[in-house]
Image (cartoon, protein in one colour):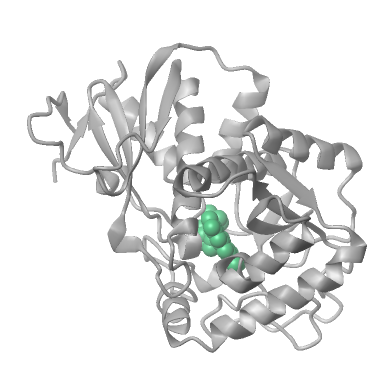
Amino acid sequence: MQATFPAALGLAPEQVEQVLRLAGRAPSLHNRQPWRFRIAPEVIELHADQDRRMPGTDPEDRELRLGCGAALFNLRLALAHVGVRPLVTLQPSVRIPGLLAEIRRGGSVHVGAEQSALLRAITTRRTNRRPFLPTPVPKVHRNTLIGAVATEHAWVHMVERAQRAELLGLVRRAHEAQMADERFRAEMAAWTGLREGAPEGVQASSAGPAPEAQDEWVLRDFSGGHARPRVPGKDFEDDPLTMVLCSYSQGRQADLEAGQAMQRLLLTATSLGLAASYLSQVVEVGETRAQLRSLLDGTLEPRAVLRVGYGSPVPPTPRREPIELLLPAAAGQRTHAATR
Ligand SMILES: Cc1cc2nc3c(=O)[nH]c(=O)nc-3n(C[C@H](O)[C@H](O)[C@H](O)COP(=O)(O)O)c2cc1C
């Protein structure tokens, strides 16, 4: 079958395709990949895919935009890697629902070693739900992660021991509230614990071990009921490095900014040999999110709770092909269509 792929920003069609492939490697809630792109010669538009909303889990689309922000960060890196300095406008028009960002050519650029390491990490990063090694994350790495997030104008709070019990309680409360909600359970059932071969959703092979009552953290069971039995003695680490990614402001634009900061954090962690997984319940439920905000002094908006450490290898999750991410050209829009 022949498919067309447009050129853009001075790049050849196959370069644009590769840039979108890398953008699409971003993490997203239940791997729904809620992003679409419209390509024109002078601009790449990032759109939210309204058909991939998860109202039972993410009623206000906060995490949808967080994932799209992560895809935008990948896109920025991938463009820089092919010499294009990305000029990004967030939320360029309130009149076009779902249009999240426009990316134009802002000149040329050569990437340095740090950006190259982040680019390589796009394809090796994974959400790792398995137990981590007991080895602590060195302070120098923690500081590197804090710096990475600050570069994207956000903040990451390292959870102190004294705050841990309270955070654990909030996660548990949020988890119970969600599990009592039929719509939430239906989304979990539809998009996790899947067999191999689907281009989206979370495969059972990416799930962590079966949750057990004595576990300190309440982790979601992504196995669809097919979790491998726990290996004796291989429990979750006693003292996980837990962090809360926060933004300084609220709203749709802040969601996109936080998503870019989250992806910079995750790629930096990957480049340092670290793995990460999420404890999202607490930020998804409005009441516990407000309580977490109070726990963090009330001025920052919590976006994602992450567990970071040294993990064992896990398989990659699937992605849709770049051609499936394209939105049709807008009326009157000129495209340089190429045939593959
Ligand atoms: C906003 C957001 C929230 C997420 N929440 C959770 C979560 O609570 N538990 C979890 O195990 N994974 C969570 N994930 C991870 C996704 O399931 C994962 O990104 C997706 O399955 C793709 O896999 P990958 O990250 O390995 O590429 C979340 C991801 C995002 C972007």
